[in-house]
Image 1 (cartoon, rainbow, N blue to C red):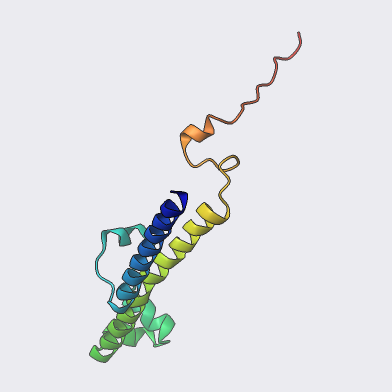
Image 2 (image 1 turned 45 degrees about the vertical axis):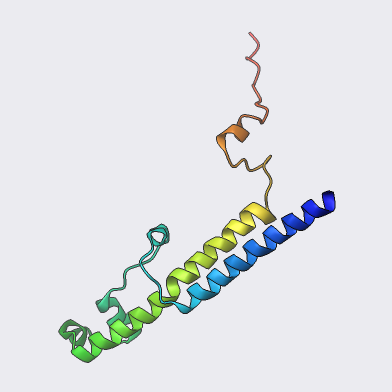
Length: 130
């Protein structure tokens, strides 16, 4: 009975792992789409003027003109960065979650819920002598 149950659990875990890995592999091939969960990440808006002066090192007068070729180069650069930024931030958050929940899971020193905080003994100081 125990062996059958363990085989079933092992099969379920393996199947779930394969489904998640398959979904991640498929998602890697797709360009990023608007996902409501993406709002959780600290994604910075790109600014043409900052890109023009700091990345391209062009003079401010030329950046103020915003020539069509400069605008096309900026849009290409922005699309390339956006394609990789959200997946990178998702992976970084996943690694942080794994590190916190699996590698350094210590519910006594780091309670995860308010109910666990109440389980810890409280120390009270005695009143000063009179």
